[in-house]
Length: 197
Image 1 (cartoon, one colour):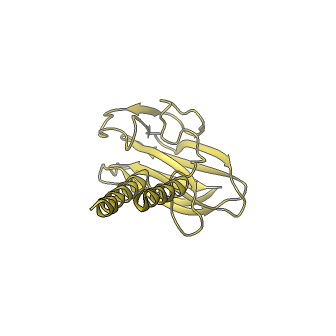
Image 2: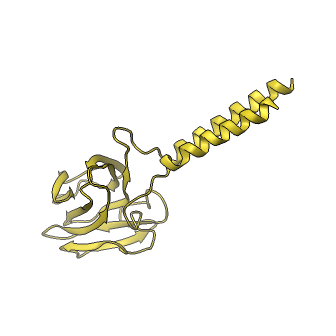
């Protein structure tokens, strides 16, 4: 009987932690899984900007899912922006993945409400997806903007998210929750075996 009670307690702990791990992404179509720029607004020079799947130029595929965005405006910056409602004074984790190879000339500028959080000339992630995260404070209605220029080729973007960070703690990845759940189940199995033996 004690083993069953313990199993229920472990299951409840996992369920209580789950909502925090899957905090709602305030960005619409942050992974571009609609296959287009649904939810996003075009900004500036939008030529050579598209959503793709699979290999494209030097990129082997999406960071996660099937689709990702590539940007190659020539001569001047352009890209996408999106506005969303949040809680004024709330703490948010702004995260995205970039893939770039250091083309010359190229650049990337990322902004939160017009304030630059990332600015790089000839960005180079070694042609691998690289995560960038920033802690931001909500105003009640915020806008994120991504601007690119890549005269010779493209810079890729995937999995943009803005999630409540609960102050100083970041939102766990789904894989972390899976690991925690697996550990809880293993612990429950060991305890169950002990009570049987």
